[in-house]
Length: 266
Image 1 (cartoon, rainbow, N blue to C red):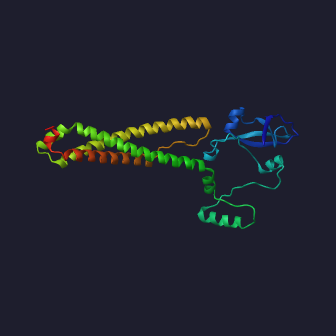
Image 2 (tube, helix red, strand yellow; image 1 turned 90 degrees about the vertical axis):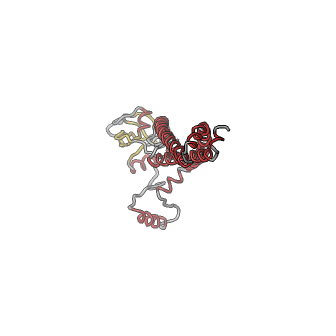
Image 3 (cartoon, helix red, strand yellow; image 1 turned 60 degrees about the vertical axis):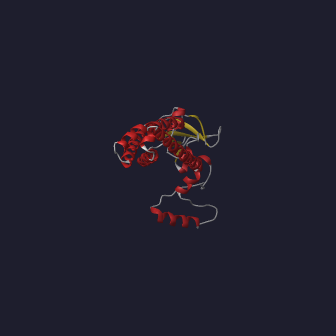
């Protein structure tokens, strides 16, 4: 279907009420009440249409990279405009509950040969394979990042605890038990990990806002490209504290196993 040009129809000409999406309205500077000429092919004869509604774009991942415009009109007007007759390429049915979905699929697929019914969720999965690949790629990157950060954190804590070897030796000579020393180091590591995870959550939340602002403006879609949920925050904070406690425990145990005089360098 082609959008030819703004049109002004006479009283005898048929005028079609249509709804256009906000992207088309912004690009062509259209407002409610404007008249345009619709045709099945570029340069062909068509019908005059008047804009009666402007719709918002749906948050559909399959439409993010498309530059297509959407025009909605009555089915009878569409059939007459494109000359397609009493035929459709696809249609949607609303059902109530999973049982109704299964029953509708079975009845529709048994009616005739040549077409097939699918659940909307199955169609969404098929049209979002690219996003599934990107999601798996992000999970792989996240796993590598977590392992690398855990190793880095362990090395940092080993160095920091090793710098306090004289303090640990003094505590040991004063009669402080190994268990108390290890506990104090682990608590300190847990507090540092908690504060660091809090700062990480703030940075991630700000980054998510910037990403959504940029890509929503670029693709003109309400789709959320980055989200920070309570589940993600809880998992990140819990994993950070777990890694911090584990690294602190490993560093403290390594240090308290040495004799106090050895820690003093004697």
